[in-house]
Image (cartoon, rainbow, N blue to C red):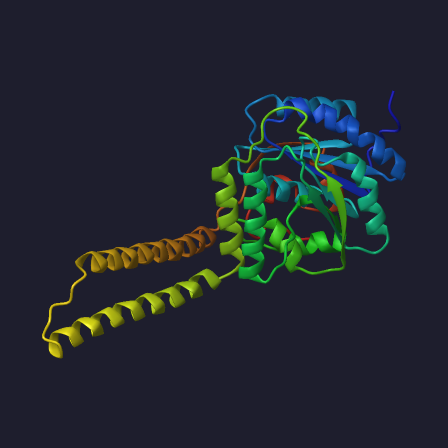
Length: 341
């Protein structure tokens, strides 16, 4: 019914797909991907990472593996988040090139041959730049552009609006990414930071095939904070500047009060102004303390050396990893979990 399914331990191309409650999308995604992959004439594997789903995502992955052994699966013990699901898939990928994409079909599989063509032309990393559908809410588009602008300004690592986690890695570039052992990984920033020759492919975002987006506002805010605090200490330095400015205002008001009392022998009016300024300064103080706490919290999380994710099951990967001489993915979960030649 299908083409030759003979398992190969070192496929030329790996596709990594994180999935959280995406059981209704996975089979459709598999059939959509097979067509473009067949045109490439390359050996391939698809690694589906179940990020602690509560629906039938894992049973769907198992069924797809039974139909096609090139479908492989990693299952987390609980939900660890999209970035760690990507990391688990990247850790398991064996291809000379690896493509990351989402399970909801908003990343169109027909773009895959274009990514591979750019890779064959010499690019070590092939980014995609998403042109949002007009159905994407204006607020989401504006906040996305704002975040990437602020991130690029604060970190010096330029990320264009529309650059998400749909990209191709050459093996050399991927091995460099896997050397990072930090908690709260911000892969989009790391990929830009490591350098390597890169190119871009522009695509029009598709519609989600089924289900609801898993990126709530709460998750997006946390994602933004992780990205900025993991790449820049400029917010802390801005705190120093704010402290100097507010201190300057305080000293100016104090000098004005002393002058009025000593020289003019008058009482300084402006009780409401004084309270307002004090409230403003205390507000800034608490903001800066919260910012400092965020950085200290990141240090605490890092020094604990806890696993970044825990794998409970895997399908089709243990034998391949053993044959390649790698450590099975189930043990590759800590901050210093990846060693590749």
